[in-house]
Amino acid sequence: MTANGWFQIVSFLLVVLALTKPIGGHMARVFNRERTFLDPVLRPVERLIYRATLVDENREMRWTEYAVAMLLFSVVSMAALYLLQRVQLYLPFNPQKLGAVPPPLAFNTAASFTTNTNWQNYSGETTMSYLTQMAGLAYHNFVSAAVGIAVAVAFIRGVARHEKETIGNFWVDLVRGSLWVLTPVCVIGALVLVWQGVPQNLKPYDTVKLIEPMRVPRVDADGRPVLGSDGKQLMDAVTEQTIAQGPVASQEIIKEFGTNGGGFFNANSSHPYENPTPLSNFIELVSIFAIGSGLTYTLGRMTGSQRHGWAVWATMAVLFLAGVTTAYLAEAQGNPLLPAVVNQHATALQPGGNMEGKEVRFGIANTALWATVTTDASCGAINGWHDSFTPLGGMVPLVNMMLSEVIFGGVGAGMYGMLIYVVLAVFIAGLMVGRTPEYLGKKIEAYDVKMAMLVTLVFPLVILTFAAISSVRGFGTSSITNPGPHGLTQMIYSFTSQAANNGSAFAGLTTNTLWYNVAGGITMLVGRFLMIIPMLAIAGNLARKKAVPASLGTFPVTTPLFSILLMGTILIVGALTFFPALSLGPILEHLLMAAGKTFA
Image (tube, rainbow, N blue to C red; front, side, top):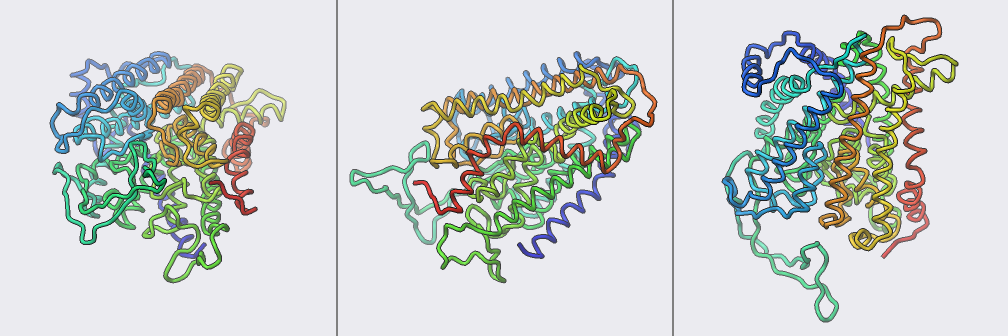
C-alpha cells in the first residue's frame, strides 16, 4: 500500500460526500414536486408524456397498485428487449451484420437489463448490434435505474407519511426520475467522456494490419483450448486486428450513474474505449456512488430528520472503508506462491502487489477501490478481473453483495435495502429495552418485521439453492475452469451477483449455457421483484400508521449508537447466512494458498 493509493481512496470518498447534499436535495425537490431549475425545460416534456400515455399525474396509488404498475412496466420492457435481440439481424444500425441472439441468452440478457443487473453471458462487441445497444440495453439502463429510484422514494414516503393510504404514483416517479435525475447528468457526462477519448459513433468496425504478426492459442466456442493429435495446444497466426467502436459514451455514463454495469465491450471499464484516462476512471467511480449517497440526504429531507440521513450515510461510509481497506491490503501483499525472484514490492516503476488481471494504468489502489465500489453498489462494472484477485481480495466484492449491497448501493436499491436493515435494527433495539420498537414516530409491528424477514430470506435462498444444484450436477460443474475451492467461489459469486442485481463476475465460469442462462435469469428476476414487493408492503403499512410522540424510551436513530447497531445488524445477518459458504470457498482457498497448495 502507498500514500498515493490512500490519497486517491480518501479523495474519492470526500468528493462523494461533497455531492451528497446537492444531489440528495435535488431529488427531494423533484419527488416532492417542488420547483427546480430544470422545470422550464422538462415540465412541458413531462406533461406531453402524461398526455400521450393517459396518466393522471395528480392521482396517487396504494402500495398494491404501485407494485402492479411496476411489475407490468417491467414485464413489457423485458419482452420488448427479448424480441429486439431475436430480430436484430433484420433491423438497421447493424453494420457488422450480427445475427439473432439465441433464445436462452436473449432471455438471460432481457432479465438482466430489466432488473438493473446487466449480467452479460456474451461479448457486447460481437453479439449486440448498435440498435440493440442503444434502443434496448441503454434504454433499460435508464428505466431500470428510474424504477429503483421510484421504489426507494416510495419507501421513504411510507416512512414520512402519517395516516395515508397512498405512497405516490409509479408513473410520475418513473418519469421524473428519468427526466430530472438521470438524463441531465448523462447528457453532460457523455460529452465529458467523449472529450476524454470514449467513442460515440455509428461507424463499422475498423480492420488494421498488425506490425508484428502474432500466434495465439486456438479455442473452441466455449473458450476452451483446442488440442492437436499430439496433445499439444493448437496455435493460430494473427495478422489483422478488428477494432470495435460504436455509440459507447452514451451507454458508458448511464451504466455507471444508473449502477447498471453492462459494458459495451467484453472487457468492460478496463477497456481503453470505455475508460481511457485516470480522469475518466475517477468520474465513473464517483458516478457509481452519486445517487446512492444522495438518497441518504433525500431520506433525511423527506422524513424531516436530516441527522438520521447522515447517520445512515456514516454507516455506509464505515462499511465501505472496511471493505476497500481489506481489498487493498490483500492485493498489495501479492501472491505468496510466486517465486522470490518476482518482485511484488511497490517501487517508483511499478505498483507492486498482485497485478494479475489488473490494468497497469490503474494499479492496485484504483482496482481495489473500483472492485469495492462496484459491489457496494449494484453496478457490476469492472476495471480489473475479480477472478484474478487473491482469495481475501476477491472475497470483499463477494461479501459486499452478500450484504445485499446496502453500502451506498444501487440507485434506489441500496436505500430501500438499507431501510429493511433499519427496520430490523430498531426491532432488535426494542427487544433489548422491552418495548414496542419505533422508527421516526412509527411503531414497528409484527407485519413490518415479517415482511423485512421475507426480504432477508428470499435473497440467500435463491443464491444457495442454485449454487448447491450447480455444484453437484454435471451441467453446473462442467463450466468450472478452476478446480477446488476457487471453482466453488466462482459458482457462488455468479448466483450472488445475479440475485443482488450486480452483474459482475469472477469470469472463470463458463455461463453461456442453457442451465446458467435460465437459472441466472430466474435468479435475477427473483432477486429484484420478490424483494421489492415486500418492501412496498412495508411502505404502505407504515404510511397508514399514526405518529407516535417520542418518549424517554424511544431509541434515537440519529446517533453513533444507532449507526453501530445498524452495522452490527447488517454484518450479523450476512455472516450467519453466508459464512459456511465463504468458509468452503475464499477462506479455505486463502488458507491453502498460505500453505503452498495449488490446484491443477
